[in-house]
Length: 559
Image (tube, rainbow, N blue to C red; front, side):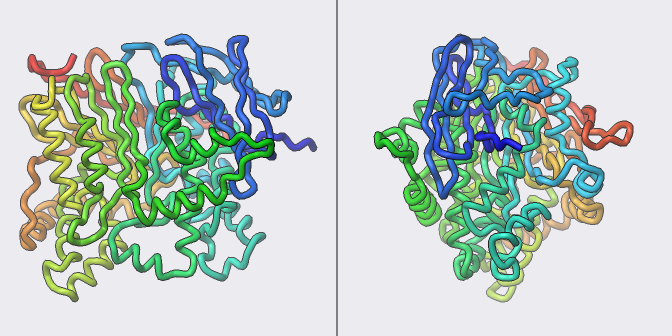
């Protein structure tokens, strides 16, 4: 059996009106070529801990064009595979002024697509989506962007296949056990996540953007200073965080960057300025960079912003940019908040903020997290603070509501935008999020200006057990809302600056959601995979829920 020199990819990453970035992992040092529209582009590989990668910049394309492409390694075509049953992979450039259409979701585990995997983890919504797109029967429309909001990989909750790989390398009885230890294990985990043929074709054909959440590194990553100090006291954490951030830069973040942003990226500059005859080994540079990013998070930004016609998308890092010092505790530090504040402007039709953690939780859970933050930081004394910290980590009480300083600052920013104080108010200010393993839509109670919406799509493939679904519902809704609000007030937490309530949801299915700017408003829909006829390898797609958020008819609203 011949081993292909293409390990992973191609993945279609940043795309604008005239250019595209195509990412690959190769088996060895190579020259990677992309052929499209009778033109060719090439890039040399760079190495990280024995793995080889390339990012090919394809430019000179026409706006709004659809161009099939192929990939070669050292002159031999490797994509599409000779035995491929899928349509040609294409580069679809953006059309100037066209409204935004993107699909999003979070939390996807990598287990087999067989009866056992479907029984334990449900149908992979991403794979069902891919198969439906490949059929081209019109049920789904092509998005401009596929946006993954965290937990692309689970470094702490590993599958049987990942554990088998770990056992072949080290004693799994020694820390960190079944969790990931280094870059080599991350590389294998990403391979498990992205090597399925249907998903691989989809990711080669639809532009992809990403941001991390906690399980990309570890559950509750940066929940509190106490959590961080506990991790740093272990023998394995330093290796984990360095490998996690270094691999994230290679596999996820690099492709988020526009050509202009790459030109100013310090790691990419090392690649671009390398002029030696041998392949650049980036291992020590990238490890040092990752170590510094963890130690001094203000020295690098993982967030990014893109405009699509009259719509703006802001993807906000809500994990690495935290300030954990109790005196300044914030989900998003001062520098990151200032960057976000500067980009939150009116004049857009829809202002979309993507953050892995929901900004607007169900009210019951919001008040509970606000109360927990207060007691964990000493509102009821040291003993209660220790209990609060245990609850925080056991129940994952570390969303925006658990960082009240950040929640209120962002609430002020979005209210200013929605009230037209920063230019013409958009039709909506919409948050897209994941993380919580159920989906819903909530809205802030307002009678004028922009509609403020929270849309959640989680999981893509990692459903909550039935018992935990009940616990989540009890903590989030009904009588618990009043009780948790009383608890919050008892420790001096001021009421939220506005009220919100659910429009639809929650539901707990594996889903992939789509956001579309339409003439009638912002359409939000959720699609799930369904197994018909008992064949888990060939699921179909069904629409689980949908809603159109119509604009108010205020004269100040964005067009």
